[in-house]
Length: 138
Image (cartoon, rainbow, N blue to C red; front, side):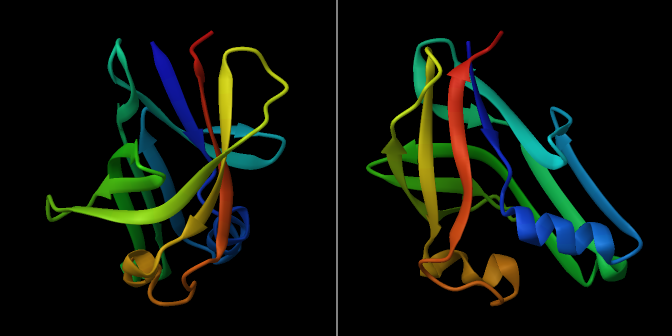
């Protein structure tokens, strides 16, 4: 089985943490590595390295700020996710990077215009997000 790990956008997560009352959750539960929150998603199928399942949720300001996405897929250089309403939307352009770890692939991630509303139009097309890593579960 493979696992997708993604920090979303570290400066955004730092902002949420500093905002006072907040919730940063996921299923499976996110982990903290070197003070960065990492959301984890499991392979949807043992033979498929492009579809994953899981949920990422970030809430702050009494619910006025909420980012929720699930079940990421990578296809044709785009990262798509399922939104709370059940629809799927492409949120980022992804490009593979070289990796120093065997069994993993790292991707650069840049926001697409279609994802701007997810972030309340604070981040715009081309904004770099955290690197995404797909690797064999250890």
